[in-house]
Image (cartoon, rainbow, N blue to C red; front, side, top):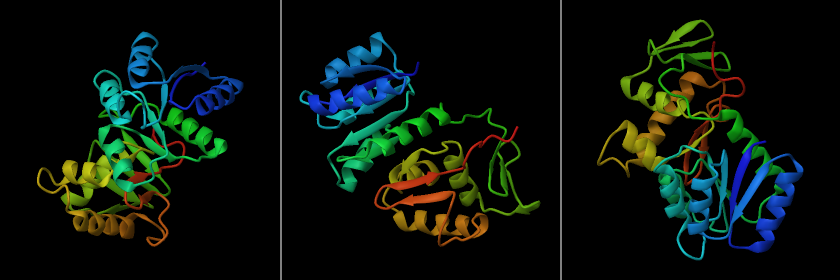
Length: 232
């Protein structure tokens, strides 16, 4: 049974989530505060965390930071805060996804299943990533599409590499800019839009309606490879 920790200070939501998850075979533990959440996670390490940001004793981002000190467990933020800055702060703290209240149970369950399928973010041992008719060979730093090599600039390659190493994870603009361009470029959003546009023109069938390199307005970008994504 998959172990899930649900953290929310609203008893009705906590109870509803616990009932729905247990009915689908999850092993559920609950917490109503950040302190209780961190203690429960330490005593019973979860495989998934569903976390509200507005907790009575600390902000949810502090809970994420506490978890990230020792675990890479997937964290789905479930919050009534709809402002893009709150979402970005949660992603920058280490959250993997974000759902705004009120939410649909079917969507929430689908997001959790997707997080479980992805498991631990891809590391250096991932040989290649396949999506559509494209293969990204991480070892040789080559991209082949429909049998032909795609020439990428060093910046395009670095941006694509960061995305494909975190399949399905929503990466904030700040994360991508800091990782690809380095310190001092955290607000250079024009750079990111330009290079994402170039990647889409080279790798998407319809760059105006991308299937794989997805933008979440005001938040960041997500690489959606489909399933499976590892080219054995």
